[in-house]
Amino acid sequence: MKILAALALPLAVLAGCSQPELHAEGGWVQLPAVPGNPAAAYFTLKGGVEDNALIAVTAPRALRAELHQSMQQGGMAAMEPVRRVPVPARGETVLAPGGTHVMLFGLDRSIASGQGVELLLTFEAGPAIRYTLPARTAAEGAPER
Ligand SMILES: [Cu+2]
Image 1: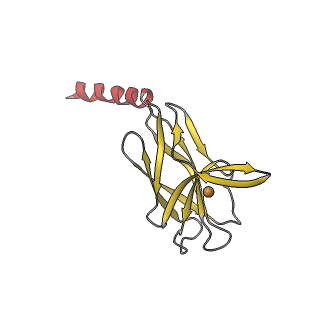
Image 2: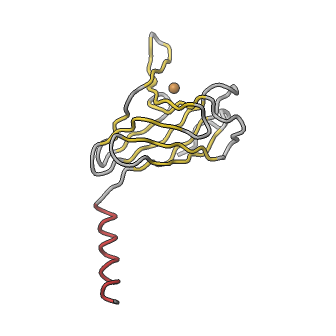
């Protein structure tokens, strides 16, 4: 029994190093400056062993969530829905202000600064991922890195 235990630990460590798993990191939910306006979620997706893509997001405390891409249109900031957000194998995709983001419509107005907002992230391949982000007010803005 002692020999088995000694073997099991190094194997687990090796597996953890060599097999990156698709997951989400960091980020926050930006509450709207004007109550009733949409909120936005920003975070980083870390790729697994194969190319994948985020294709849908839902949030239990929002009426609707959409994947959006920000852009400049005739000198004005605009955005449009996107169908898929690629997450390269062993790479990362950053959802950030001015770029790709998750728009949350009808987010529960009782959510205050620091409270967790849960997202369910659906990918082209593999199981969906539940990820909870802290809410920040418009005055707080982006967290310091
Ligand atoms: Cu948007």
